[in-house]
Image 1 (cartoon, one colour):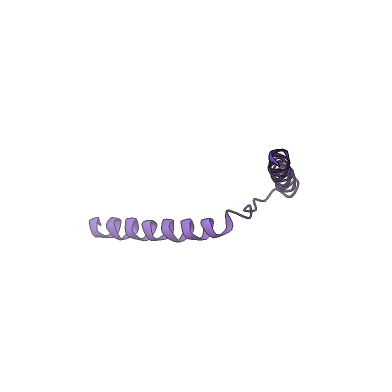
Image 2 (cartoon, helix red, strand yellow):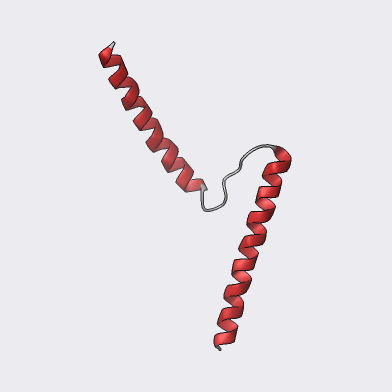
Length: 65
């Protein structure tokens, strides 16, 4: 039973490694960056958050001018 669990876990990790490797290869061939499947929602949240920080920084700079 434990061998089966370790075997499945090993296959999942190896499959993830193959996915990431092919993803990097595709990015290098096209010259563009594409988010991995776990980065899509995170990138949207980070971009929204960074945009808010940027707007606040611009507002502060406007106050000093």
